[in-house]
Image 1 (cartoon, rainbow, N blue to C red):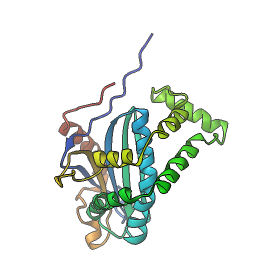
Image 2 (cartoon, rainbow, N blue to C red):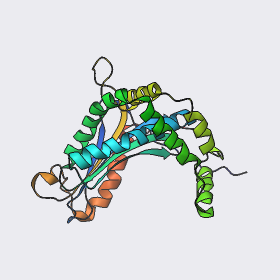
Image 3 (tube, rainbow, N blue to C red):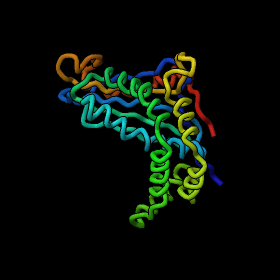
Length: 250
């Protein structure tokens, strides 16, 4: 029988420095800056999957509250898991018309330094509320046949074929502790190790810089609007060359 071509996922380098792609908005009249900081966390397994989901649930509200509500960074602030053909990750996103893109990147990084103490101080009741809430979400019935079909079809497209994925994830959640979550945060997101030295992380930042006034457009590449789409392709190709075409394989 014919085999489908394998979908390879580029391996983001494990380095102290963060690879950054900076491009202007396609619309020259767009004043918004958009930033995504992506952490690549390794090949999929159920324990890692639920740790990422639980960390996302725990971090999302304080991330939004700090950057959106308190710091007034913009109208869109969020974090969410990423699943790319068997490779796990997590993204932190900010869209702002009040801060420059580089400030948004720096504020995301600062958030990681600030939030760890809150994770350590979190009481068991709050931890269990997050864990049980996530488990309940995973056990909810599908709202429609179309939603259920989409869920199972995605298992086929992604070649995972885990038909009882949500059930298996809830079982895995039952064994997680707060210490597991803190260790995962330290391993994946914390900028420094226990000795206070800068850590290596698999991270990629994409900045799309708008054409705002003054400092808001700081760092915007001077590219002719008609050439921006081709520059996007060049940026992607350049990234692949820089990582020496390393992939996660099967």
